[in-house]
Every structure is written in structure tokens, then in C-alpha cells.
Image 1 (cartoon, one colour):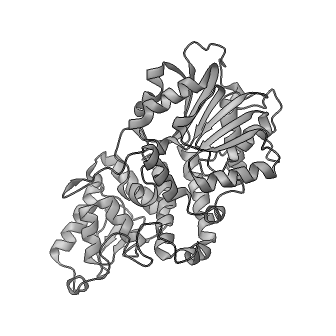
Image 2 (image 1 turned 30 degrees about the vertical axis):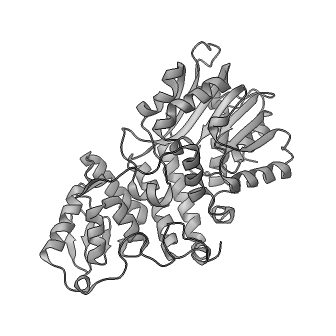
Image 3 (image 1 turned 90 degrees about the horizontal axis):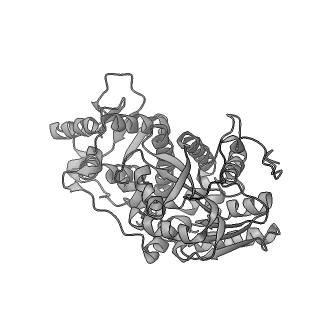
Length: 435
């Protein structure tokens, strides 16, 4: 992960992250009336958040009526016009390049902005003067592999800096306010296992297994056999190594392949944090894969970032951080289940748990920022701080959700009549004491 590697944001090291870099003579000149009008218009389209908005002369072009929670400073005219042309992409690119600064707590400032936009219930900030931005590439098998490589194959050493010791890169579950990130991730994995009622000797298939933490957890604590699919080469290699080290290689098989190629019959189908990368065009295909894989008396769970209503994905996040990503609404998710007449047993929203998880990740990222800067560059550091802080703010403002949907085949009636099993020690003695 040296400085000669290709920049993860798709631009040369030290570049403008996709927008014009050097200031022209006119940009260095004073702020004019049009500049101030555009600044005010941007904030109005954003729902008038309680934030000050300053231009490159250092003066506020916008001040809220309420007490401001922070300040956004645009450093040059090119950055202002980048926001006008494409608000989400322009803001993210210019912040990454140091052409926009946020004064105040990063998460709080972004939370106030997102909440104002949600209160306005408008799609204005998704558009530019040229109309809505085009959608990115499709999640075909080849496209999915390319998109996953862009984000997850940055290098295990990078993620090891700020994830928990098990390398869990999905929403944690905080059973109490004092829980550490490690404890909360352990609790999340138990929460998932309880929902699909794992028992020793069962066969489980996992679609999208990350670095293998959940698959290994299921085998270790619940005595099941797991086949886990993933198309990230680095993640699968790491997971296989962990299985060997922990003595679980005979129970867990990690397969570098697309979820569409899952075969066999299983007592449980588990997917945690993969659906965001599938795309609505492929939900029916995923449903067919689940239907042919899940035994008649089996249980399944799909855990995914989502939305309260269908909406275009954040353009900067999709193009710079998560290519091919799309967080669905519950209505959109139902196309996975309805065509195969699955019975939905339980739906839970863990968005506040994910907001806290991201706060923990950002804190650990910041503690190791000098190392990240050495491996990559300042633009990468700023982009990932914006990504982690922005996602935490989005969960806090309810701009995005975290859904867990539990389901089974329609004629399976030997299911729990209450949720008691989610909150007590399992009958098989699984230990949830975070040892």
C-alpha cells in the first residue's frame, strides 16, 4: 500500500478528486453578488440547515436564524460551482481536495444538514442545473466483482487499523451504552444467530461473508457447518487463514464466487451487509437463489442498509466510495421475498446502532490517521473521514436505515411465537458473555 499505487478515489495523488484543481485569477478575486446568491440558493435547497456558509473571502454568505451548529467554508469559486453543478458529488470531491472545510464537529454538522434536507422532503440536492445525475454501472457478475474490488480490496492492513479485532465491517449491536466495539460486534453476531435459531449440526450458507467473522462465529458458538460466498479475493484469503488458525477449517468453507452460484440445501440462509451491493434489478434473482437453497423448514435473514422511501443513492458515495451500491426501501426489498411466497417473520431497524458503530470507526480511524496518510494521501484521509462521519450522521437523521428481515417458506409453522429467544441464553448453551 505504498504511495505509487493507484489512488482509491480514481485521481492522481494530490489531485482535485474529480473537479477543477488550480484557482484561476478570477477565483482569487473578491466575492461578487452572484457568488453570494448561489451560496444562499444552495442552503435554501438544502432546507435551511442551522449552519453558517462562508465563501473564500471569509465572510458568511448565509447565516441561519437559529444558533449555528457549525460553519461550511468554500475556498474558491470553482468549488462553489461544483456544488451547483452536482451538489452531492461536488461537495464530496471538493471537501476531499481541501477546497471546502467544515468548522465544528464533523458528524454534528453533517447531521444538521441531512436533517434539514429530510425535513424538506425534497430531492433538490440530488439534482444539478443539468438534471439528475446518471446512475452508475450495473451489478452484473463482472460489474459486481469490479465494484467490490474498488472498496474491499484496498488492503487488509488498512481496515485492521480501525475495525474491531474480528474485522467485522457491518453494524454492531449495543446491548448497553458501555459496550465496547468488540463487545457490540460479538453481540450482533449472536443476535443474527438467534434470529435464525441455529442448532448444532445444521448446514448454513452465507452470501457475502466479509473477512469471515460471522461464519467462524456461527461454527464456533453454534456447532454448525457453513459455506460462505464472497467475491473479494483479499477477504476470502484472509478468512481462510483465520479458519485454519482457529481450527475451524473443517466446519467452514470460504468460496470466492458470486452469490448467484450458490448450490445445495441449507437450514439457514444468512446475508449481512451484502444486499446494498446487489441492486434492485437483481433482487428477484437473489430471491430465486434463496428459494432453491433454503430447506422447507429453514430460516433466513437479510441484514442491509436501507431507506424509508426509494431514493437515488448519494452520488459522491456511489461514485467515490461504494460503486454500484444502493440502499433499498422495505418495499423494494420485498421483491426478494414476494415472488417466492416467503413468509416475513420479523423486521427490525438498527439504525441508531449503526450510527454509534460508525462513530467508533471514525474515532479509531482518526487515532491512526498518520498511518493512513502515509499509505495513501491527504485527499484519501479526508474522503474516508467524510464517508464515516457522513454515514453516521445519515443514520442519526434517519436519512438511511438498517433493516434486518427474518423470513421462511410459507408453510413452515414450527416457528417461535414470541421474541423471547432473542434476549435470553440459548437452549444450546451459547455463551454471550464476550469472553
